[in-house]
Image (cartoon, rainbow, N blue to C red):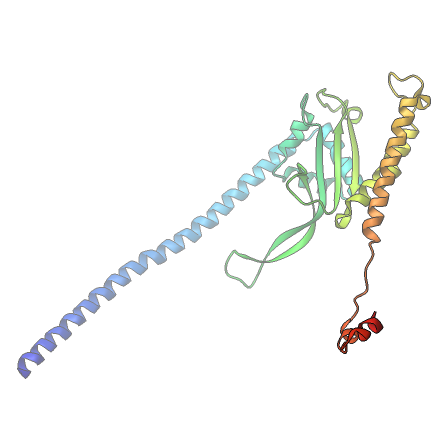
Length: 273
């Protein structure tokens, strides 16, 4: 029996060793292709990034070729209003995903407004010590970008262009057909920005307006006077609303424990009161 046991044991040991070798060989066979696949994926990823960069550069150059007098008018207004160079504004515009909105704005019966936000945006910063491409830090940086005005929070400056008619915008009529304005709502102070825009820019411009189209009397017309009065009243409402928000009452926190810890009977309550 011992002999058979040893023989079986030896046989089992031999088989287990052979099985282990087979498994080890199998695992090596599996690992090698995986390693090779990882290397290939890295190479492909790098090539994909280069291809995307190449396509992005080609797209920018195509857009740059489209820039004419109409675009130059927008670029110059933005550069003057936001205190950026025209070259910086041009690079920003041709790199923007919503570049096509500008052409839609110029088209006959096109978009009625074209909006740009200039505000802090979180920018991903790569960690130089990291071997991966995963960004590790987010830093707020000022950025100019085209927007529809409904998807991003408004926390900075809004530069806007408004059409005055449905005519096609050309290089010769852009200065007459397009109005430019700005709202400075830094830190989200939208009420203050709108109040300043209306009281310091729009109302003085309206009150100095001489040509009111079909209304020959101009500022002497009762309807125009009523309109200007309504605008003044609206600005006053904005101002009072802003002041109510800013000057809200802050109640001082009081430690009432010192007043109630020794209350024993009704006379103590009267004294505390």
